[in-house]
Length: 561
Image 1 (cartoon, rainbow, N blue to C red):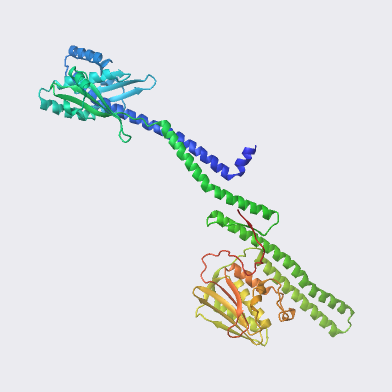
Image 2 (image 1 turned 180 degrees about the vertical axis):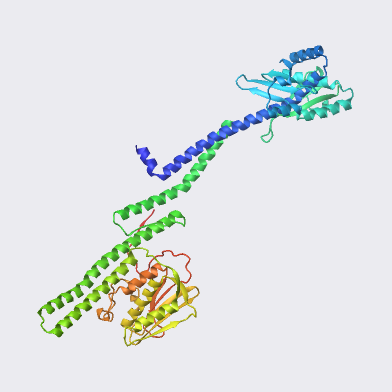
């Protein structure tokens, strides 16, 4: 049960087990492949070697035209060869297409029976539809001696040296190895071998392979000239592919491959284990956990996404807590004023006083509605990715609309528009972009003394909107704090100025989803605060980046080696 559980839960166990099965399958396939190749090679070798010999024997049969002489010749050849030759009609044996082509090309058909360990050889007699056939169990010195006799018998039909030499050159093509008359001194025979040649006995010369070439064997027989001999060969000996050696090499190679794969996979496994350890710590509530990000591969991106996820979850939880505390605090004041006004309304008999109390109640209810609207907007932007309806927005028309809406408030502050580009257009969600400019303008209206400037344009492929005022400005060390929800910096920015501290927080969240940069600095013209948001004017795709403006700073626990 433990093994089944391990195979189900560990992907790397399945990888290693699958790799082992692949290695075993490769070894088995290699064994079958080598064995098949060996069988094809030995079949080709047998046919090539036997073709010349049986062509020579079939020529001897073809010279015997009378049946009695042919039968006598076959009997004599069988006695010399050690196996019984026979002549059968070609149509009495069933051949494959490849075998028929070989017979028609005067080549030998070689059939080996592995069960009986016996070979059957067929060769077509020239000019006839008859086959010379023999069953052969093994090849030894007797068969070699018989072959030399058949060769000398064939050469006897060619009386001159030139004719014999030409015949040997022709037979070399049939045998697939050279057969030539050479001076006896050039062969390199010792005295005992020369004595055997004098006794008409064949001499076998063997040359061992040097690791690159196969082993060679040659046959030397006497010729009609005492100073010359007939050299048959050299003939390549068949070399089997050593299956055991090949299997061992394959196993060693696969073992090295397995070790290499393990060396490549183990770091990946280790990094995933670290990621799992980080997930376990987050499950226990430790949202400060961070995992080590190594490299730029898929696991590194997964680790980076995990860190961003835990960071986002922590910020959401902290924002929810802060929002809950701030909401309870912000709601308490207007609710208390409404309760006080209701009590006063119950005790007041004067009509005008009752109207004043009613007006106060309406103003507080309106404040509550505004607060709830701000809270819902901020929560919607904070909880996840909003549905953005991207379109090409005319920035000039947008800021002019905000100018008209701001001037409609009737405050004694001059609002001007500065459009730096003739055709300022950019991809954006018009509704959310309008909210950004509106919030920034509303914030500037609270703290400006006499004028504000709303600017927009497109510069180097990035669109921007800016709002600046001539108020007291914001200290450099406090500029990031203004984007934190329900934050008020000093007495100059209190409830008396209006607002609940959510307007700029909403702007920062919209900037986050716009993949925009948001900053605050000093206005170069009005000397007050200036808020600028810029984003890509042409967005083919939007991706989430780290929110450095609203992210609360926290200690990080690094999970690593």
